[in-house]
Amino acid sequence: MSSSSGEESINISIDELEDRVNKLEFLLLGCQSTSTDSLLRIPLPTFNQITSAQKQSQQNQIQSSGGRTRASSISTSQLQQQQQQEPITDSLEKFKTVLNKIKSENESINNFMLIYKSNETLFNKIVDNESLLNSVEKLAIILSAEDEIYSTARNLQKLGELEKFINSSSTQSIPKLNEALKPLENIHFEQEVIAIQLNKKLEEKVQSYNDIIQEISNRFAYWDSIITDLESKSKDL
Image 1 (cartoon, one colour):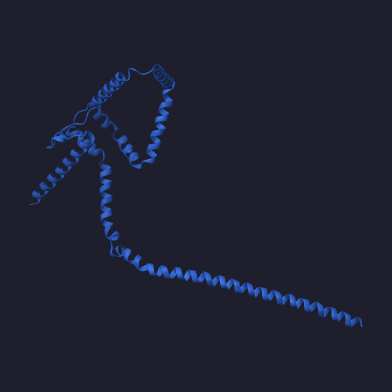
Image 2 (spheres, rainbow, N blue to C red):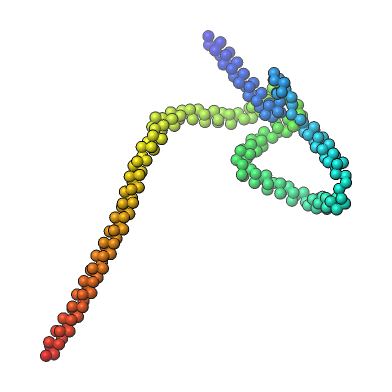
């Protein structure tokens, strides 16, 4: 019984591996030679085919534009001379600056460039040969990302373990609690407006009290000066 279950798990693992390899083959080459779908078996045009098509298109454009004026040809030649006079190092620095800007503005492109750099030799071999990958090369590509696959699996496992906390009943009840808090928010806003008005009235009362105290103090000072004058006059008499 255990041997049969082990064989089933091995078969499942092999099927999953073949499925992943087929998907990877389609992503890398743009076709699947072993697919039952005739459309998927048609390969994408190679680099040489694209280059020859571009050259043919350029030749057609040159032939169709044979009646251009001499002034336009002179400006084109001047532009080419300027491009030729520009040092290669300056051109490379410009391209490098543009590439760094694109990488900094697009996180997905930056991540892809990091993955590509770690597997550059495998991709270059595919482009140079322009042939289908054999099983060993497919397995090598998969194994080159083994650490990332294990890391992703561990993260998914942790996410599954924490899902009960993320989707707990208390978390799911948050929208309802927010709706229940809205009347309290309205009451709190009304009380805040009332408190501001009361503070304003209190400030006015305190200011009135200070004005009254100041007026009384001025009157006492005036009376004190009058009494002092009367006392001095009585002594003179």
